[in-house]
Amino acid sequence: MKSKKLMRILSGLVSGAMLLSLCACGGSGGSGAKESPAPAATEAAKDAGSEAVKEAGTEAAASGFQFDHRIEIMVPGGEGGGLDTTVRKFATYLEKELGVSIVVSNRSGASGITGYTWSHNQPADGYKYQFTAPSAIIAAAQGQCEFDLMSEIVPVSGLVMAEGMFFASPKAPFKDVNEMIDYCKANPGKVTVATDSPNGISGAIINEFCDQAGIELKWITSESNEGTISVIAGDVDLVINTWSDAGAYAESGDLVPLVVMAQQRSDIYPDVPCSGELGYTSDLGFYRVFTAMKGTPQEAVDAFEAAVHKVATTNAEWAQWLEMNGMGNTFVWDADELSEILQNTYDTAVEMNKK
Image 1: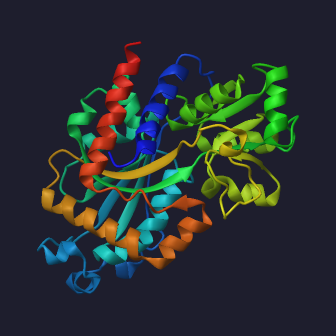
Image 2: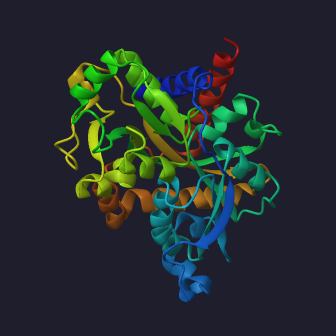
Image 3: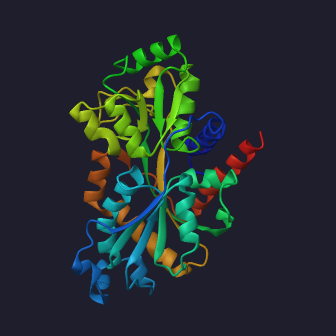
C-alpha cells in the first residue's frame, strides 16, 4: 500500500462501521432501480461508431479493443447522491473518450448489496460496470450478500475521494463546531445526526469524530437526500455529507457547515474549520471507484481502466469540476491498487465482525 493514510482510512471506516451497526437508530431506508442516460448521451453519442472511437485515441483502441455499443454503469445508490452526481459528470467526458454512450442505472438499497445483486445477475459482457463506495464490501463481510461478492467483483479503477463534513441545521442549538461539541457534552445523546450508511463510511466518520471529541450523538438512518432535507427542515440537527452534495445548501444558508474531516482547510471552503485544527486525526472521506463482475473480458476491463485514467488525469474540465466540488484527483488507483484496497476493506470488516 502506497499510503499510510489509506491504510488508516480502510481500518477506520470498517471498524467504525462494525461498531455502529450495533447502535444505529431505526429510520427510513429504501431500494429502487432507475436507469437513465448520462447528461452527455446525445443522439450523436448513442450512434457513435468507429469514427468516434478513432478520434478518441485511447489506449483501448491502441491495444486492439474497441467498445462498439452502449456501456451501462450501475450505481448502488439513488439519483442525486454523491456517487450518482460524480459518475454522471465524469461520464460526459468518458463517453467522448470511449466513443460510445453511457447509461447510469441506479439500484439503491441494502448498503449497496441490492445493486451488486442486480449486477451479479447481468451478463458480464464487457459493457457493464459499477461505480461504488466501500459500503457494499463492508455489508458483504457482514454476511448480508447471498453470493460471494469478493470472488465475483473485479477491480477496475479508482477515481476520487470526497472529504466528509458535518453540516448542521440553522435551527440547531449551536452555530459552530466548538459550540456543537460543548452542547453535546452537556446533553449526551440528545443531538441527532442523519446518516445514509451507518454500516459504511458515513457511520465511520461519525464514530471516529465522536470518539475523538468525546461526544455521543443520536443516530437517524435515512436515504442521503432525505437526511439532508430533514436537517434543512430542522427535524434533525446534523448530517454527514460532502461539499459536492451539500455545498450549494451551505452557500444559500439552508445548512451550516461545521467541520471538514481534514488536516488542513480547503481552498474551496476556507471558512470551514478542519478537524486538524481541533487536534483530531479524523480525515475519513468517501472514495468512489469502478468495478466489474467476474467473467468480464480482461481486454474490456483494461480498455475501460485506460480510458478512465486518461480522462481523470488529463481532462481540464473534469479537474476544474473536482476542485469546485471540493474533491481531489489523487485517488485514481489502478486495478492492482484497487484490488488491495477492496480486499483490505473486506478483511478488516471480517475481523471486526468476530469481535
